[in-house]
Length: 462
Image (cartoon, rainbow, N blue to C red; front, side, top):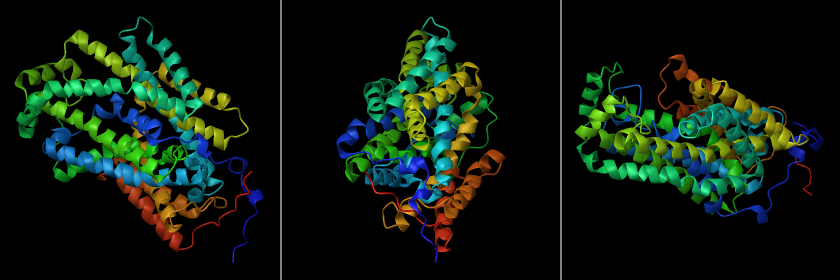
């Protein structure tokens, strides 16, 4: 029989953590929902909902099936990737980097999902800073690189202040892309019924497209799952940090159903219908082909509106990208505050923000999207392993486990391999979901095989 470890074996970042008190928690509509919704209203998410590497993109089987696939993806994000982390957060009042130690161990949790996730968020901040600043520079008479510095510093500062400040920023700015999406839908909804997937394929071929053959029904579902879940995976694991700011389970459920599921269906769903509406109208189709708009909903703005109006609408969408930038900074700040408790967060987050700005100013952030797709898919097995750990413990947090918990690391490694196979030329349908399933199954098997390090009791709370 294993000897129970002494609490003194726990790292300082665990022993110094204290639960978020009840008086600092708030209703779902004041923090979780608006902050998550702000992420999905970011134009970088919804602009490519209809796109793909095949003719017809995700509209190859029609608008209705693409929309149904989107609903399935939204449900997967809420129930598989977000809900358990959120419930663990509200139950413990502790952040992801502490809660994750039951899955990956007291030492292992420092690296995954702790410190590493915090570092990676600054990569997302760099990408946001790069693309948003370029759009802003089209209207503001200030060099893009200057805007990048200001944008990165402000986003890091707001994120460092905490979720309540991120939520305040996310309360009103997301209304901009929401209004623009609604107006786009109003101008194209009349021709959605005239959309024909086969005709779209013919148009693309006539325009010289060399894309692969149109996707079948399963292919469309897999493509949308990959697109939506791959984008959301890291934010799903961060549900712990939203949960610790929630009052009870109802807040966790409603925050996810509205801020995640409904937001995904609304934003990407409107984007799908806008693209379908454009290609259901002969006049707008001609403009889309001329502008080489493809199936990109963001580019459809210049198809539906005049060039001058489109320029300003795109400018407003760039401004509305600020909340997602703050979200990345908030997650990073939480990571550093908990894994490096003895380091002033202004210093650690400041260094991270500086790296983000450098990535943006040098243009390196503009080539990082492929890398982030891999990173996003890698969080599938983390969420899968956390779910099984939660269920095996009877719906509660067990507490930190000693060292590196073998079950968690084996599950993550095998799931990660599955997640990156598409990037190596191996076809894995819905890779982020497949990675989640592999992570969950492997963790369960390892747990039943006894490959679990012992739980280390936490010292008494002050």
